[in-house]
Each structure stands twice: as structure tokens, then as C-alpha cells.
Image 1 (cartoon, rainbow, N blue to C red):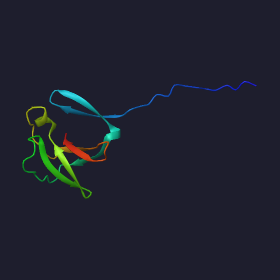
Image 2 (image 1 turned 45 degrees about the vertical axis):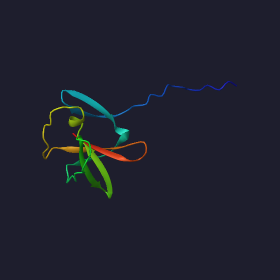
Image 3 (image 1 turned 180 degrees about the horizontal axis):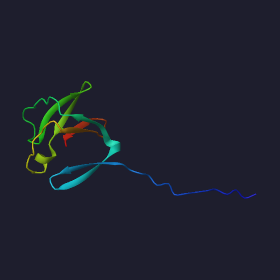
Length: 100
């Protein structure tokens, strides 16, 4: 007896967090987002690149924070109560955060 198999092409659905940077919108694959946190105390690091704002302590782990606006030469728009930091987990399991 011939066995019939129901095969369907599996489509992987990828979810993104959309952030606005200047006049552009960018999508970040949610699989890489470890956390989104409120703006907290940032410790400055001497002799770092201008786009590195400093570091924060996140659950006992030191996480570098960067400004993508500075990195891409865009005008800063200030930080306030609505400012969030997106924490990305990299392939080597280290983390980096940036303002949104």
C-alpha cells in the first residue's frame, strides 16, 4: 500500500521590533532582543569611542550602551522618561544596548 504524506512548505515567521532613527525605520529581529529596559544610571567609560555612551549593570552583568544616532552622525534628540534601551544578545552571548 502506498503511503500518502501531507507535505506543506513550512514558512518561518520572523518578528521584528521597529525603531526609528532619524527619518528611517529599522527592524530588529526579536530573536536577538534580550530585554528592553528603562533609561537607568549610565557609567561613563574613559577613552571610549564617542558613540559609546557608557555601561549599565543589568542583572549583575556589565552591558555597554551606544548611541546609534552618534554612530551614524545624526543629531541627538535628547533622552527622557520615554527613552528605552534595547539590549541585544550577540552570537557570542555578550550583550550590547542602544537607545530608542
